[in-house]
Length: 435
Image (cartoon, rainbow, N blue to C red; front, side, top):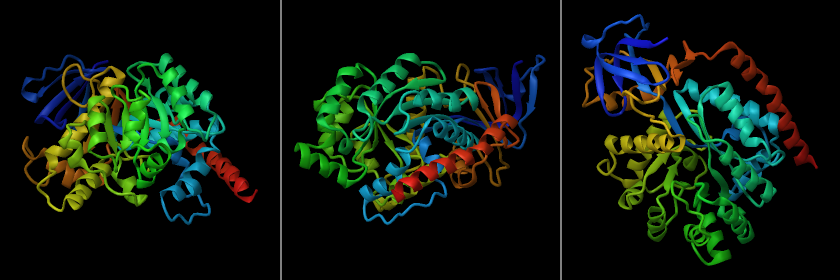
């Protein structure tokens, strides 16, 4: 049955409507002012006291990091490599298919409760590579019913041939409005020349998803081993396919940025994670100067995106030492680039409340304490809602996924079971530490 949200405020980062309506099934059918609304036996949803928005997109995340929450391991890092060795590489090499599934459920549920309806994930699991992306798809797309773009982090730490096959086979099998595969690579420092040659032999035109220059150590490792910068190395191997995701890119230079632009790749920034890891802040001005599209993710440090918008904005002001180089319009451009990238990958139209776009819709309780209009709507979001952003209702392709802040009972039950599998993961890690 066609649904109509009525008597509501509407904002999609471009247009604002007060006292409007949104008509939808799986896609948006019509949006307008209530003065032009005619009820034709629709399912009516009262949108008064709500702000209606499009679902958000996470441009780079690590679903497997979900079970690191509260985990206790010996942890005394002095640099970024220590963080990898002492935490993340212990975690990911002990992940099996059960861990993948239940962490996928938890991550997807937590994300959608924060208004995220599309995830772009960068996965790693040492115990089970084959079937890992299919398992993520089942959790995120089939069971929670979000949209997902998935890739396995090929690395010399794992079975390289299995990782390559997992990326290639998943990408061949899935290309739908809900699921897409990229070709995952971990980072230059864990990829030998032989591995990159193997990747090139299988890659064809699949975009890659790779960490680049997340810390100075990654660039120094590449220069010491290969006497070149990371992006030049990837370009030499012919791996920078169009629409590839270059995650982080904090320490790339102008020559590397020119190569990224030439190959029509995008950079995924993850400000909160970068600050947490003490590796620095992405130089957005340099990215803009090279006219490179920038998408925004959370790097698995959280399940929210609005806090990432806040962090990006404030930290960029701190880096620039002026409020004049980066404003809300620049933030809006990054949010829009993220929507456009996800739309391109999935073959759908995301990020607008307009006819023909996917009905990925958020209903957020909001009574503006000051006048709200086309000119200041983003300011209301940024300085008001983004600090505590909890949609009461969330629709994906017109289906209600979150109803009064909660998902369906069967998902809650599965979510509750996740602790058992998190404990099993922790037990494996603790056993490894003792051996």
